[in-house]
Image 1 (tube, rainbow, N blue to C red):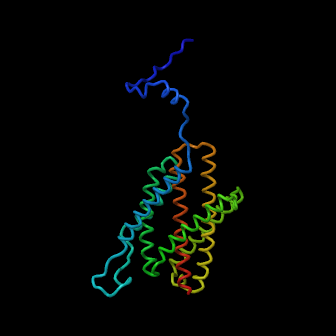
Image 2: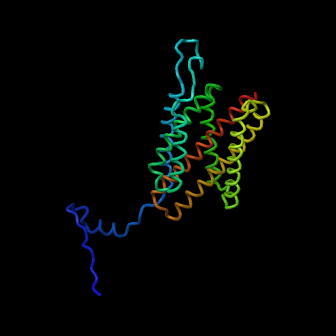
Image 3: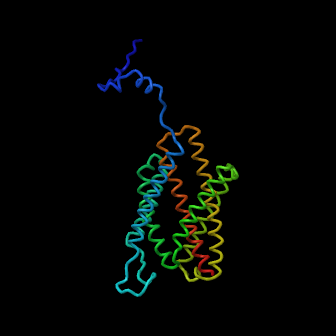
Length: 265
């Protein structure tokens, strides 16, 4: 049987025609996931979240016409017109990305912008009720992330299959609880502001913070496993997207916890 080979492409550029370049090209391996690459992608997405947050904050706050002194009396906070559109848009994009991790490069940026807009509006509302709570939540989020990273790097916490199953089951139960509370609030929302619910809400939020921290250690384990196995470099966007989602959840949970603690004083 006669076989044919396709002609080798050549370039007029001497640098691309050299024997050294051709040998390097022949022996090179595809780029793989690296910790540095995931870190850069994560930071990029978080910058987009902050930009979207500034947009949402500005859309939710409106300066009052008259000067009534310093403080929040100078500002009116309302739900912006695109709040629900951005919320459902972020949900749709999140599902779209989860169905195919290769979409995370584009989908992750769109999700970060939409979710940032929603977070900005929510943060403005919380900050109008308790001055300085947003800054405290941001600092707390960074501290929890650093603590989770330290516990993972030092191997004080070692993620296992049982741990992953337990965290996933607990998160599922927490989501069902949130859904039940949301449905009950449609019929009678006044009990949400009772002292009993505030105390229960603080405990649940505290447990959610622990779950979010454990989720971060599971994310770190997934990234380390991908680096060791030589996963394709394009998955760095997906890992960055996953870390961003966990950090957003952690921030919202801490915001709620600080709000409950502030009301119970």
